[in-house]
Length: 147
Figure 1 (cartoon, rainbow, N blue to C red):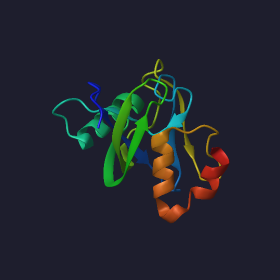
Figure 2 (cartoon, helix red, strand yellow; figure 1 turned 90 degrees about the horizontal axis):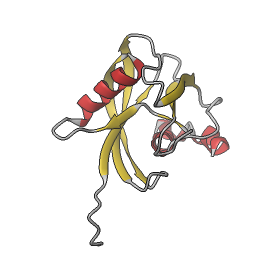
Figure 3 (cartoon, rainbow, N blue to C red; figure 1 turned 120 degrees about the vertical axis):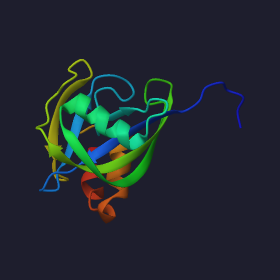
Figure 4 (tube, helix red, strand yellow; figure 1 turned 30 degrees about the vertical axis):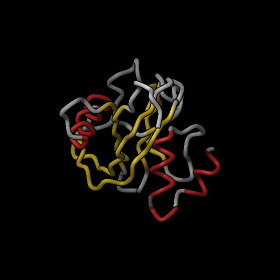
């Protein structure tokens, strides 16, 4: 155990899948992991449930309303370029209403639907964690090509 005054932060994200099984990813422009493609989501505010944060953040980022279908995994980023430590529940979700669009262009460079055969070259830690732990490893062959 360390005597550091630093504490991990809490974030959350959602793996939004479409009817074809493709995953919605956004490109991060800010640290942690600037330039990488990842799951939408964000920082949990004090007193806010992680499920509520996921829905709020994704509506703010992409202008869509989602339904969370299950807790998929827990991700952890330790110094993703910002010197911080983040712990994040990742939920599977589906779009209930709206069409994705970038609502915060200062934070995100783009978005897209990706199948396991067409993953972006650089992925965030939460996206990798989700892909490694879901669908009985179905994403693993494509994921190895992306790393």
